[in-house]
Image 1 (cartoon, rainbow, N blue to C red):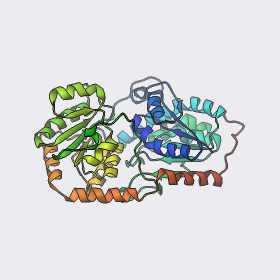
Image 2: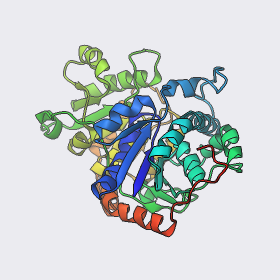
Image 3: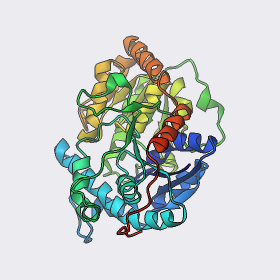
Image 4: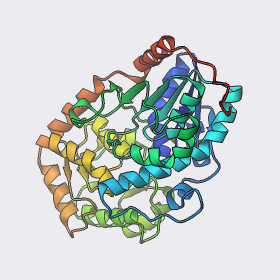
Length: 394
């Protein structure tokens, strides 16, 4: 069986799909992974054959429409507006990716296409080719409010297929723990989240710990040094509030930020951190609500303090807090001292640790990527690949 995985956006979307892709490859299937050119290093670092879907950077799609006109940022707007904006820019990425994916398919026609949560090119290409389409959630964030924006953006491409909205997947794999799934969530086949990650040789501090409480702080991989960058502001403010707690603080951040962070706080470890290795050694994970970061903490059984960087991230953060494994502050909360107080409260309370461990056990009971490969095989057997329609542009 030949499987094409389609990702897109940031490196975290590659690492979320890589475990299933690697499992399929290990089972003897022919596997390729496609993504925008920014992501090719992350794909090859995951030991997967990489296919470039577009040379345009992600910023191109988030800052301008198809005609090159600037688009307004959704920050500070409602959840519906943020979802619509996100769906549209992922739709533009999908439209730009289709020509390269179609050309690839002429030479390596897939029997099955797997796309990430908002990898809409996967749905379009599968409909074009008449092959099964699988959507794999790459985090625990509900995306139902994002898809309508993509339907709107992709009307020209959908019209070619005789559709007015994107096709539903033949199979939806959801990595969200069942206890945290929203009541309105569509039916899904559960999949255990396994973090794919770029790695370097480990240093002892990454897998050992001292007798002090250990806190890992991160604002994701997209932070820049720009003092006006909201995630950079969150990172520096959080660090200032965490260091007085007497804990060992690790800062998972781009290497480019490490010199500045060390200059301000010489005692912290800052820069590249293998989060999947470090998280189980931590007493607390503090972050901006990133979906992959949050799931990594869940898999490690580590309590979390979350200040969602956008309202789109707040729902999943609140669900984790309602479960009892996290404490969530209001979206973008910059109240002086609030984060430090929240962390002090979480470190002193044993209940969140127990709930975090219970959630870890729930995740560990879900089907692994290796077991899920058999589900993909069954899907292609039930739905044999069809040849393209004569009118297809392939």
